[in-house]
Amino acid sequence: MAKNVNHALVEVNLPPAAEKRVRELEQEYLERQLATNDVLRLISASPLDLDSVFKSVIATATRLCRAEHGRIYLLEDDLFRSVASTGQDEVDSRFPNEPERIDRRTAIGRAAMTGGPVMIADVLADPEYHLLDTQRVVGFRTVLGVPIQKEGRIIGAIATGRNEVRPFTESEILLMTTFADQATIAIENAHQMQTIQRQKAELSRFLSPQVAALVSSTVGEELLAGHRRQITALFCDLRGFTAFAETADPEELFGVLRTYHEAMGELIVEHGGTLEHFAGDGMMVFFNDPVLQPDHVVRAVRMAIAMRERFAELAHGWHRLGYELAVGIGVAVGYATLGRIGFEGRYDYGAIGNVVILASRLSAEARPGQILLNQRAHAAVEDVVDTEEVGELNLKGFSRPIPALNVIGLRSD
Image (cartoon, rainbow, N blue to C red; front, side, top):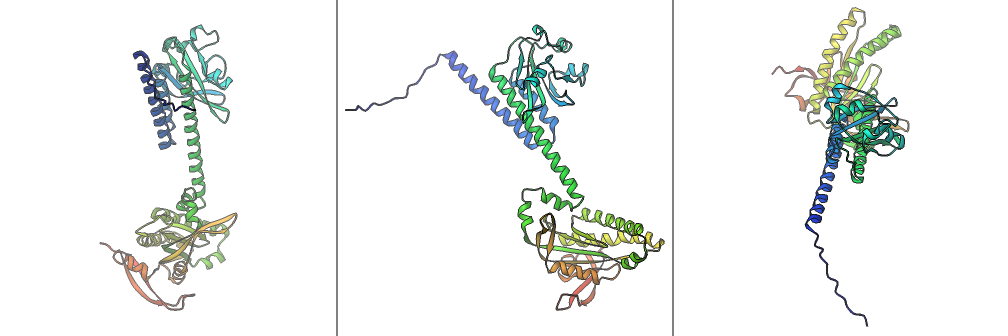
C-alpha cells in the first residue's frame, strides 16, 4: 500500500561569503538590465541622435564591464573610424580621427575578421598588436573587441580596455555583445528614420505636406479608406487666362503658371491648407483635413485675402508685359467625404461632396478680384472680415439660387 509522503521545503543556509556573493550577482544583474533598458529607451526616443546614443552605449558598456577605456567605431571604406569614446580624451587629442584597418594588429580588426568577440589578455605580450603608441599614452593592458553586425555584415566595432592584465569574463563579453547589438539597432533605426524623412520630402514635392505625412503615418490607412468631415473648400482660378494662352508663346505661358503656382503654393503651406490639385490656371484647396483645424474657415478666408493681395503684385508686373490677368476665388463650408481617390497605380487624396461643387461654382462666378463666400462660411468669419452682399446666384447644378457675399478685406480692429 502506498504511503503518503509530505515533502517539506528545505532551506539552504549559505555561508556568509557565498550569500554575499549571491546578493552581489543579483545586484549586478539588475544593474545591467536597467542600464540596457535605459539605452534602448534612448534609442527609441532619439532615433536620429546617434552621437548621444553611441556616447551612452560606450559609457555604459565600459562602466558595467569595469574597464577604464572604451570606443565605438563605424566601418567606412574598409576603415574603422571612431564615433564615440570614453576615458580616452588624451588619445583623442593626440591621435584625432586615426582610422584603423581590418587586420590582426588590433582587437577590433581580429573581431571583424572572425565575426565574433576577441580578447587580448595582455597587449604587451601579443606579438601582433601594434597600437603601442596609444597604449603608452592610455596605459591599457587587456582589451576586448566586439563586432557590430547587421545581417552578418560588419558595420562597426566596440573596443574596451583595462589598465591591468585582467581578462574579461564570459558574462562581460556577453554584455559587450549585447551593447553591440544595441548599437546595430540604433544605426538601423536612424537609417529607417532618414529613409522615411527622405520619402516624406520626396512625397511633398508631389503631394501637399499634410497628405505626405498622412501616407507615412500609422493612422493613414484608416483615413485614406474614407471618412466624413466638415471642411472649408476653396477654388481659385485666373480670369483672362484663355485669351492669354491663345497668343502667348509656350515659354511665356509656363513661366506665368510657374510663378503663379509657386506664389499661391507658398501661401497654401503657410496657412495650413491641403492642396488637392493644380489644374492649369485653377487650384483646389481644403482645410480641416487630414489635420483637424478648429479655425479652418478663418484660415481659408485669410489665405484667400493673402492670395488676392499677392496676385495683385504679380499682375502689376505682368500688366507691364501686356498680360491682362486677374484672379477669382470661391470659398464654401460643408461636409464632404474624403479619402483615397483613383485606381491602382495612380491615387489622389481628395474631397467629394456638394461643398466642393459649391466652392468651384462660386469661384467660376467671381469677378476679377472677388472672393465669394457661401452663407455658412460668412457666418464663421463675419467678426473677422468686412463683406458685401452680391445677391442670390444661379449656379450650375444647384436647383435654388445661392446667397453669396464678397470679402472686402480683414477688419482693421
